[in-house]
Image (cartoon, rainbow, N blue to C red; front, side, top):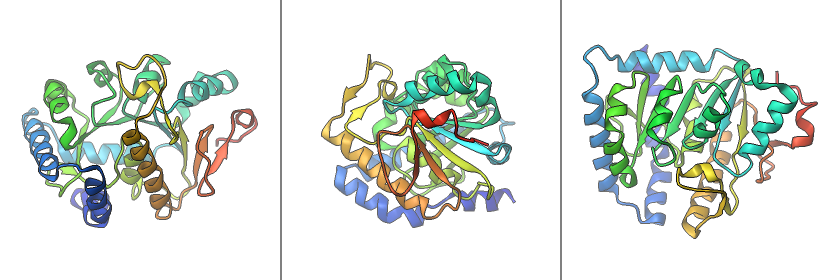
Length: 278
């Protein structure tokens, strides 16, 4: 069953055309991506002898199915206003009734608001070591541009029990490749085969315009205008969300997003109070 579960999540071959296009368009180094995979794999090998890789994955998959709705939090500029508005009209305990998954730096704001985090998907460039102390699961991604981060967080990766590793290249017995490009869209790729038919996906702080949210990087003091490269990455992320939405039967809903699309329903702030989230 556990081997079959890994096969369900690994979409390396299906995603390879997208990956080849991305590394060519951004001039990424394929060999660096492989090096990052090896580094993260070797760090994971240093975990305690009783660490159960397959058991952690199974536990995460079971957790995903525990509640009716799944909330995916990105670091976009709408993150703070949306969360604060929901708290004002629904109460902080509202988040206890959902599965809460954070993309990278969004976890810092969720932690600040004391919202429970079931999982953080991170390439480690939007978080600090403190974020390892809060979520139930950490899904750490290896790519060529975060090799230094993998080494910096080495001790935390070794110590954190409920850890799942992902890679952009061919997976091995320690790392998965669910597909996806950025931390935010990768969450939906990972969830693709794990969802129950009735679950809904609500995306909060998922904006794909030219403004980058302040929780994207720990050193940001506020929202900033994105570089041309960052804007191109966000465009890819949104294109990938649209692509993966065709392969997910569950309803995907953008909450107060600055990005509008016919692919997803968009709930504005003034409709949140009346919207039935259950």
